[in-house]
Length: 295
Image (cartoon, rainbow, N blue to C red; front, side, top):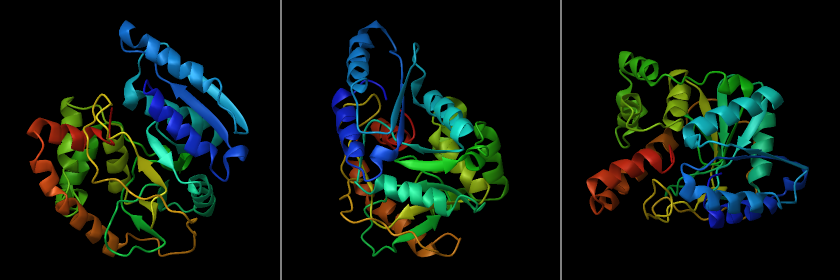
């Protein structure tokens, strides 16, 4: 977490209301300030998190310097999976359904030894089509997710290697969800140093290894960071969802990408196209790259 106290409070309160919260270890990584002006906001965050209760055990790791989201996520995930063999990752602007931890833990248990599965994800796009209870997509995502050490060990930090494999196999259009979303451009920008996104590299890692992520048919996560308060955010509501009021049932399904859902996702991305037209071009690109992929 970084410096948005209101978002952090909402995220923690929702997590405390989760069915498995009392049995969960909560490890908090608090990033350091970028400059002296941010120190007071960081101090407010740290004072708040020291009073958090409702979990089995709470560990707080305070960074003295500013890691930034990419370095912080990569270092934090690596540390935790090396210690525990698995991890559930939440950022400070994600509101969870009371059934989020249940879904994540049951998914991590169910698919622990399935090499084809790289991660479990809690957010589901607000697709208009009827969705199955759970489904797989050939990718990885970053709004409330979990993985195992075997999955994170595949993470490739070199964007050039990832892009080369995508291009060599002529998979650019597929990687862009049938040409509906600019993931290849995001990866190119990461290589050029225009963004420092960890998540585009995580997504590409899963994609080039032909790995799958399990998604819920109804969303267990709502991102409240689209309120123009973050360093790289803009106000937008097309990704807003209604959190499920019922648990998601995990059961045996074919270990392959759901082509019906893949098509529905492409249709959704194309449908929100007009929303971008109303925004300044630079902000559109920045939002695409950083709303989920960096901060």
